[in-house]
Image (cartoon, rainbow, N blue to C red; front, side):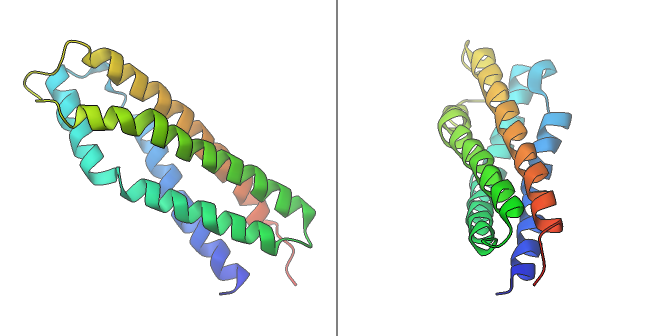
Length: 153
């Protein structure tokens, strides 16, 4: 596969991943939701995204590492890509150890009678999401100049 094809696939998948993170951040702040609305919305999102987005993230990490290896003659692109990998790994670790444990708990809740501590878990999930989304947006900000400004042979 050519480097240009890898760049295209990475940009497409990363745009989908970070766009989803940003969309959740911009449009789905759960602070104003009732308990039942929050649980229903969150359970639906977990069912839809809990496997898909981490899989896309893993592919983005692999492609970014691959492109960093291919950029051996372009130090600027290589450093940007390595920094982007660090951001993507941070987002992955936050997802795995911050958001997903809370997701597992929320999936056990009955929307009509969530536990009394539901707001604490909601707020913790939201804080972790903001960290993850920031890391994802940083990775995109690093990958764009690396990929779009990469030297062509």
